[in-house]
Length: 243
Ligand SMILES: [Zn+2]
Picture (cartoon, rainbow, N blue to C red):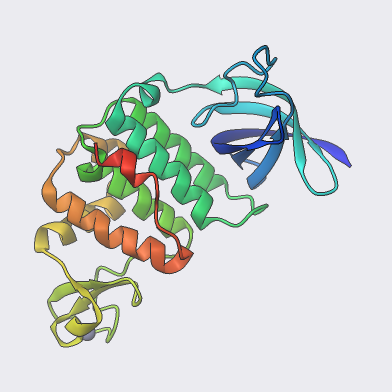
């Protein structure tokens, strides 16, 4: 048993008993971990709003036999727009849910921590919505998939390896498929293919500046299928992104 200092993004939380909560964290030094916060649901909780989702905190965690308990929390960053702007909330909520879904517990992954922090910062800077059509959201999910080892194949047919024209996207094959392998995928438009390329190549700050568009929603649908193929789950937070 010991104490551990870490900087973490709060991804979400669930109630525990009468007064406590379990918060889901993505910690720079620890990866994804759960931690108990005692007394946080009491009206006069000493924690205030510090441990709310999307906040970044410096924490001291006590490592018990099976669970961490938060013993100290200092707020490092809060992103106010995520609580008042639906498009910004949509991006942040999907980013946090996808991070929790893609990465195993107790695997430190500093690049993912940095990516998540950038995603929250960019969302907080304002998103031309609805989020489901925002290039930033596709970019966040594609970059998280990349870190998890599931970068979509966009430069050749993901099924036969050929260089034929891409006409469909296959989540099971992991990317674009050619005319010959069409039956394995779902049809995709050239505009959505371009959105996927941009989401790989351009940084989040640039993606945020691109306008919302219908073909971006189509690109997101394919990326979501890829996410589901690998995690077995759907992103519930997309309901906030529909705007
Ligand atoms: Zn093919």
